[in-house]
Image (tube, rainbow, N blue to C red; front, side):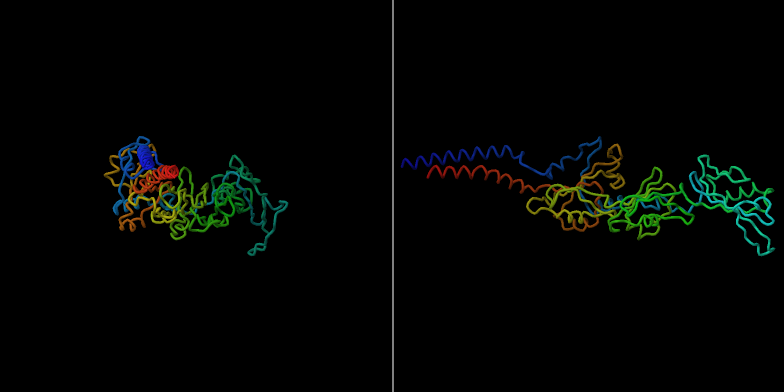
Length: 401
């Protein structure tokens, strides 16, 4: 009988211990480990500010997805750079010129020139003389020197213009002079090709006119598969990029290059970050032609069945105002670079969302976050209680025995 009462007392003590453990655990629920904010916490952030800009929480619908898709269209090379056209070959400082002077028979000025080559004129069988000048580099003053013609301005002129100038200077000195000026090495009309190509080069531009794909081919081509490459062109203060596959499929985007252009081949230059209750967290690169939400979820292994809140899938993005509904963008304060902090909320429990996800674009530097389901937090709480109660019960049983 006494043993019974002792056991009952011990049981009451155990219940007291368990109650205290539960109260302690309940008080610490807010301190349970979590991967990020809950769905409710994200919803409550509406109206808060970051970088003096208003944070917007937008539920993704078909209309919102269409607006995002329209606003995410990348600028085309033909729009930013223009189609262009092959330029006249203009000589610049540092270029190498080859100058040949012909004098009709009877040669008066260059007839006795050492090194002159002779050619027979088939009309009157008299001898004509041609004189090859040593190759000359256009000086820092933009000039070259020609015997009996003096210092001739070359920089900023075409070879034909330079030849006409020399002919004019030799008139009255040589007998019916003819001049051919040839650009041997072009040091100023070049484009630079760098990046993930076989060989980084400086490619001279010719009168034919070189296009983007010509420059890429001149560098030996891309090292990586076409579908994973992006081509970036920098011209002056403008820089724009397009997927290589888009340039190949649309000839209008294979625009003419201009002197000084820098063509950079980039391998998967874009990425998004996956966080929360996904199959895998981390930074995920993607190709230049972009990916959709459905593809992004597939690449991170989808949602975690044991943790994910299917109504708590979010995309955190600094959005361009043009991609937002005009009514939303009109009253929104933007960041210093003109962006609106937006959290797009996606309800994956709605079957129609899977169709929307097939066209919803993921942007560079997006954060894809999936919150924990409330039941997952409850499970964590139960696990904490179990870790506290069961050892106590085991100890109590051991004492009773």
